[in-house]
Image (cartoon, rainbow, N blue to C red; front, side, top):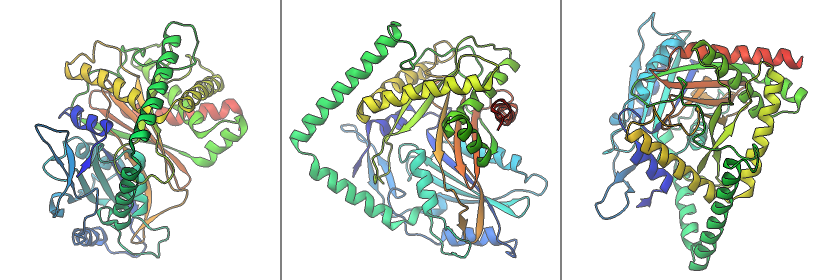
Length: 459
């Protein structure tokens, strides 16, 4: 038996048909040179024959009337219930068609009577490509962990043809068990008491920082939740139906701006998104007089922590005051991110986790009682950054061309944006409800905002 953390349990409780709480990834591959048209179909058959399933891919939720739910390891896992093959028809097999198809796969709930994951192999893409769409419940893993597992399952060279299914990684299962045994041995009564005291002090410090900011005794020292403008198409009651779009910028161009302005990738990416969102909102008849506030996940794992489950916090970040100058926008966002970093460094990770649970609970209650259209959201949207490999990786010689993490929608947000850097490109993945208008237009504005920033700093 394996206990769920409070945050993991929150993803289970918060789930609904309109707002499922799984995360996914879309991997688009190019068939190896000279490979037959049946390459992807043969790959599917071989994956289906890889029946050894390791934790956490063999874990099933077990509920009880008298105790918290736990993960129970199942003795058998039927891969026919988790691995699926699809073939797109000719003429409807472009990247845009794939994005639409995957958006449809991303909507349905996972069956809680089984291990909470699926892998879909999508064949027949244009230009000799195929795709994998991986879907797993957020209670099983956060986005950073899922990407790490995915990369571990692939090869660093095209000559390496060994098949390493996600669900058959023996080392991952052993690492988890060793880590859990070490933690159990370290949990003395003294350690628990000391840890609880530090947690309470850090939470009190964080609460005091928020109180000072809310009473205007400090200015922009910390971003507050539930102060974002709710009168935008970005927020409201989350409904069923999903759409997905992407944008892409070469990393060489990003690094040039970073070097010229002494900024980081996060500074540049958030500047582009801030500009794109303001332009999109103006198209929709919304002129904001205050900065856009985003929710941003932060990784709270210590080095070497390879377990499943979630070890993240979600904090608010205020972007730039409205401006038409991309360089001013970049500097404003840099100032805001420095304040966020100072806040994170000044409190214990457990305090950030508790803060995340409390703010998520408030948002979830608003969603449960269908009040998200009337109450301020925690932020205007959620934006996360997941770093990926610097070089191309392969599956049986097939080169991975694109990798897009696809997340869930938090309460009150109709849009979630994930950044992913891979093989010399920075991808922007946008997942939204069907009710958000003109998602493709917003994705196009990301590239245009980058062009504007590039011109403004004269790279």
